[in-house]
Image 1 (cartoon, rainbow over the protein chains, first blue to last red):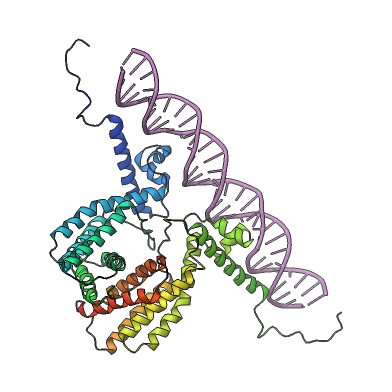
Image 2: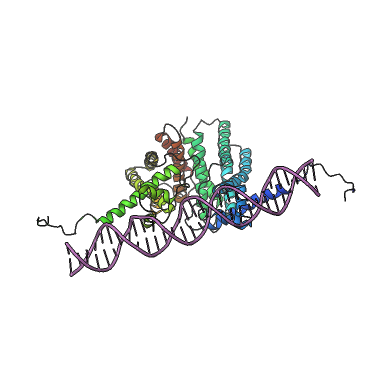
Amino acid sequence: MSNIAYFPKPHVDQRPGKRERTKTANRQAILDAARAVFGELGYDAATVRDIIRRTGLASGTFYNYYKSKEEVFDALADDGARRFRPLLRAESEKATDFESFVRGAILAYFNFVATEQESWRINRPPGEQIPHARPSPEMTAVFDEVREGFARVLERAHAPAVDLDYLTSACIAVAREIGDKMLERRPIDTEGAADFAVKLILGGLPALPRL
Amino acid sequence: MSNIAYFPKPHVDQRPGKRERTKTANRQAILDAARAVFGELGYDAATVRDIIRRTGLASGTFYNYYKSKEEVFDALADDGARRFRPLLRAESEKATDFESFVRGAILAYFNFVATEQESWRINRPPGEQIPHARPSPEMTAVFDEVREGFARVLERAHAPAVDLDYLTSACIAVAREIGDKMLERRPIDTEGAADFAVKLILGGLPALPRL
DNA sequence: GGACGTTCGTGACGCCCCGTCATGATCACA
DNA sequence: TGTGATCATGACGGGGCGTCACGAACGTCC
């Protein structure tokens, strides 16, 4: 068997080994199972065992990847933020003025959550409450991205300086809350909701106290 | 000892019996202990045992009053809303126009949370996240109160009709988020925060889409 | 004032979930 | 093929959860 001459490729430029592949596969399987379980049972009722059972893996394996139920939830939020961030960045670069930035960003967010919810917020028990995601790296990055977008666009327009932290917090809060309310209505009207949120923010901006 | 003649009062118009008194005392003791424990350990880390231990009562007694940790947390939020509601109502009645209503309500809320936090949000572990309160009766009542206040004041001013649910949600979201950010700054500046929130809302109002 | 029925406070108990760890299987590499 | 490293496995101890049978304190009626 050994005299067949072939060049065993040196281990550069090769697809990752089996170890690495099952590792990412397991991590992804746990994430998917967690998404499903949170959707079906709600965050509070869900247990680590429920999640890991659905993957067919052993209970101990869960803890090789995540420390707790909270951490896997944060990872889910992080995952969402990571997928949303390019959309936000695209809006930020495409925007010519403040209005187009806000409108683009909010509409992108509303479309994003409207798409996500069907794979994530199914069959939630009534009154169940999803906790606010902890400030994960990606979540903070989204906040910063919005903040920097504001700073850039406002400076370009020579707008007077305002409290950027308050402004960013307020805009994200409005988007999140109106987004939630929007999802409860039928049919889901992302344009209408975005129109409301955008006009509220853009109308309020010139009135804000200057620093 | 027994021949001293006195009139045993008939049991009408009397303070409630001992049973009733210890019942309300226990319920209050559990509530106070829960507030302290949530403040020290954070909501997630706190257990029913931690709460009941602090009262000196037996573990089973807790379940005579509340079904779970979640329920006692909701009761705390309910309690806060119940104490805040009169302040909100006072602002609503005192207000002459939309601006004074919004400004009064938001300032009242900011002062309220600033006062509350020192007896409630002490010593929280970093990164800890308090879950959003479930829609308890009192919380819904506050939402409705704000909504009705808006409806009344806007109609009186012959303002055009807007989406009241969206407006109320957005205002509450702004107040809550700016309030949180305000609490993280030193010194705590309720007037400055209120000024920001009020101007954002009042500036945005005329721009909102009409129904 | 005594006796009876009711209302809770009590803490031990069984249950389930949590997070860990020793073990063995699998993989990378020589 | 051999060796060391990596990682899946599931049994295990620990602890919180919610319940329940018991007894004491209370209200009530005679």
